[in-house]
View 1 (cartoon, rainbow, N blue to C red):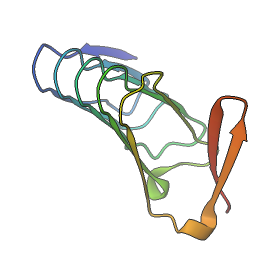
View 2 (cartoon, rainbow, N blue to C red):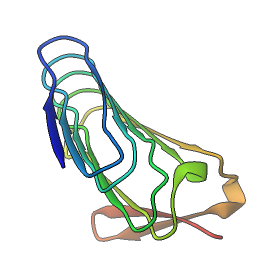
View 3 (cartoon, one colour):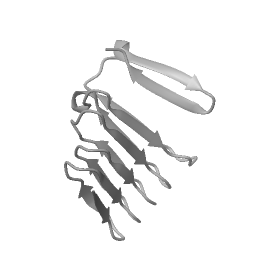
View 4 (cartoon, rainbow, N blue to C red):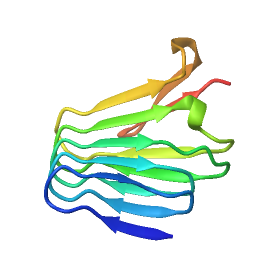
Length: 121
């Protein structure tokens, strides 16, 4: 696995096909998962975290932290049995984009304080 840290400023970091830990740090960063079981940590700033894998049996964590963060998950890139966990415990304005999916494929659930989104295949 790889561990990659961004510097202060606006970084773009893309992981490899193996398991990666990507840390954006300060600034408005773009972090891109590229296969494997990855963890992306945006840090402070308005970050964009993108699930860009296409591997089976993966777990990807997208953790925005402080700032108005954007999460992008493309259903066409999800492998079989893929799990994308989005965690942002701030009171900021965050946005989730679901690509390659129609509204009738989405199932929304509330479990305690968690909101769960699944695709109806």
